[in-house]
Length: 179
Length: 390
Image (cartoon, rainbow over all chains, first blue to last red; front, side, top):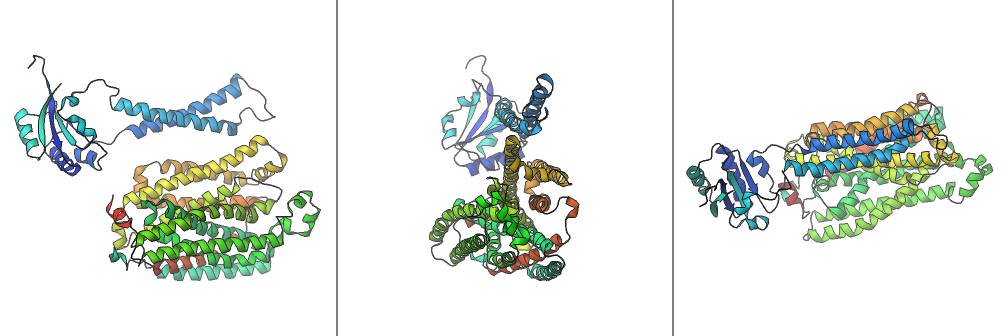
């Protein structure tokens, strides 16, 4: 063992999503908070079972969309009313009707951009290294196995007790994973 | 799923109230017809088109549901079927128009023959053509409504329900094409030709979207009322309301798109014969109605329906849907009213009488048709999955 070896946490591997759901509930009830799950597909109710709070992303997207609408509308208004007033077919400089398509496009652009980059940011991505990939057999998390990790950073984490706890949940195996 | 065989909503009271309101409303309307025949027909067109849009919206959504499937449609299918089956009644209520075309449409009056623009359109826009087309439309819609409800009913007792789902798809797919073509023509004949100089190619689509939105909001209101009763409450759960709310949201955006696209195109081109339609709606108080529509038919429901919490709550979603139904009324009046009245203050009280009269009869028919079959398509192969899934 190297000197700088640090434990990332304990990872349990399950065969079915139902077993994982039950394990997630038990883990939450046992008081663990720094818990993460890895599954090949979205498992309904898993976030609630782990007690994870709802994502803030929708609010960010709303702000992005409103910002886009304001940018698009103001950009056109400032350009065609103040900076470069140009008479087109006798219409008023402030022809809001003509500004709507661009305003709409800018709304979509910033809202969609916020959705994509906000998601990456909130997930701390892109990231070149994550200790969870040291877990034996972890590749099957994207095929047919369900993983539950309790991080060593959790205040309730205790190498022996937590291992015993996870064994009690009836997993295929429990592995200690290093950083 | 046979435990749902006897699940039928009790709508006896709605049927009675509908009949009474319908009889009173139509009696007042007939009284109005003796006072002023032209005002009567103008009011009748408004009252008629609102309920017509609801029934045709039910048919359109039903055809789409039969082709696409989906949780949103399975639990409301019987309501859509009952709504679509009222089309023969609407055909009957259409008969008065045949005697009042010159009262409603300038093109049906003799002086139209001196109008150069009319002469170029006379081959299509004439009284026999209008009547023959109306008969064909009602024949097609009635046949479609009866065909799909028959198949759906046969499925309730079928030994091989999957085969009937397939046949429903086969009938409904070409039915959607027929629906789109006939509504385009019918909306042109009945509403757009009020100003026969004017034309807009998006008008038919605008009508279809309005119909879909009217039907969705109506179904939400009825479903929420029914789900207060015992067995319904367990089946109609928040995810279903979330689906219906999301689709209503989509229809609100589509309505806005159609309305604004038509306006932007005509505003950009700025051609004398096209802009008159909007100029008439930009004065006499109609411009305030337009602003009300922008705020309450688009902005407010748009932001409300973004919220997952509102969409999942039967009560809150019903509030939004009821508000949108009222907006549908106002939008319809904004669409045809300015062709009759220069000022919004000239709106005649008869419009409320015809709206209530036709509406009462329509609701009575709906309340009579809905409980005649199980509330759920009991042998539809997708039903168990829909009922169990969250």
